[in-house]
Amino acid sequence: MIKVIKNSQPIFKDNRGMFIPIKLDNVVQSNLSFNTHSHTFRGMHIQFSPKQQTKYVSVLQGRMVDILLDLNPHSETFKQVEFFILEQGDSIIVPKGYAHGFLTLTGNTIVNYLVDEEYSPEHEQSILWSSIPEVDKIINRFCYDGIDELTISKKDLTAISLSQMLTIL
Image 1 (tube, rainbow, N blue to C red):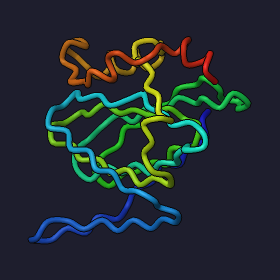
Image 2: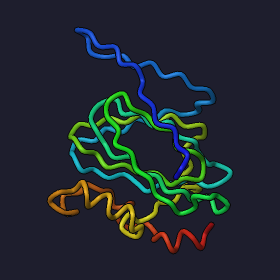
Image 3: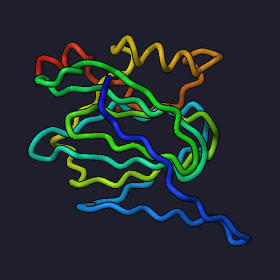
């Protein structure tokens, strides 16, 4: 099993809305993802050395399936996939060397990524989700009307296959 930390942050709600405190060290960049539609898929993304990222992913609003693929060649869990259902207030730490993606389960899902390295397009790679059998099963499990209902970027639709990615590692 992949060693990933999932936790829930305290949520303080009142007549103004909500406040969620997050305590972390070494945060270099904060990324916000606003997802209008349910079944929006973002992933599977990874950054390579020297720009590898540890990600602290939090759901600020909505519900999603968070998916991780271990791409550390020397790891006991190499090529293993694990997923987590995350709701408002839930978070997960994605270690360096893991491809990451998520599928929203509700409209208007807002996700915050706190990362320990800046985004670097030159060091990033996307893996075609359907080329990873376990990820394909997860997506199909939560897309009740079939994958035609996915909202996905052109970048993620034209990503390299897992077998191509393994030749890069």
